[in-house]
Amino acid sequence: MDPNLLKGNFRTYSRDKSVIFKKTSERWGGFSNMAPGYPLCVNGVYIRSSEALYQACRYPNNPEIQKKIIHQSSPMTAKMVGKPNRADTREDWQKTRIIIMKWSLRVKLAQNYEKFSALLKESGDNPIVESSNKDDFWGAKPVDQQTLVGVNALGRLLMELRALVENSSKDQLSIVPVPNISNFLLLGDEIREVHASDVQPYSNPQSQFDV
Image (tube, rainbow, N blue to C red):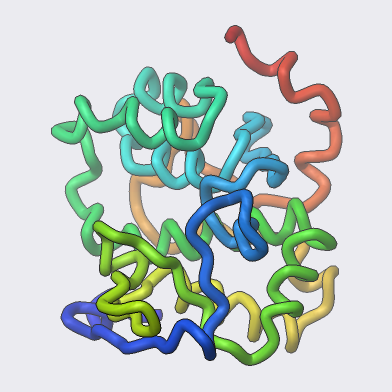
C-alpha cells in the first residue's frame, strides 16, 4: 500500500456488509493492535502486542522511551506513555508509519500464525473495518447507524494481509524481512529479520520484564 495513495482517500463502508472491530473483547477484536494473546519477539526482545511494537518504532533514537513502551503491561498504556515524548518521533514518521504498521502486522501473523490466519480467513471476502469515533485515518468513523467513512488504513492493511495468507504457505510467511527504511532501530540495535520461531523460547513472558 503506497502511503501517498492514502491521503484524502476516504471510503464508505456498510456495517451490514463489513467485518467491524472496535473492542478487543468483541468477535473480531483480534484484528486490533491492542488485542492480547498475540506475543511478539524482535531482536530477542519480548513484546506483548503489535501496538507496543508499532509505538516503539516511532522513537528509534530514544531507547529509553522504547523500553518504557515495551515494558507496559497493557497496549493502551504502551501507546500513552510515548505521547509526552512526541518531539522524539522519527522525522519521516508520516512517510514510514504505513510501512512500519504493515511490517508489525506481518510479525504478528508470523509469530501467531494459526490464531491470526484463522481470524483473517473467517472474515471471508468482507471489508475489514476498524470503527473509531476519533480516527478516520487508521479506521473509519460512524456517520449513522449503518455507515462508516474513513481511510481505514489499518483495515485495508489487514485485507492485504488476508490476501497474502490466501496465496502463500505458512512457511513462506514464517520469515519477515526488514522493511527498506533507514534508522530502523530497537533499543539501540538495527532491527533484524524476524522469524516465526523467535517467539517460542519466551514461554514465560513475564520473566522478560522488570514490572
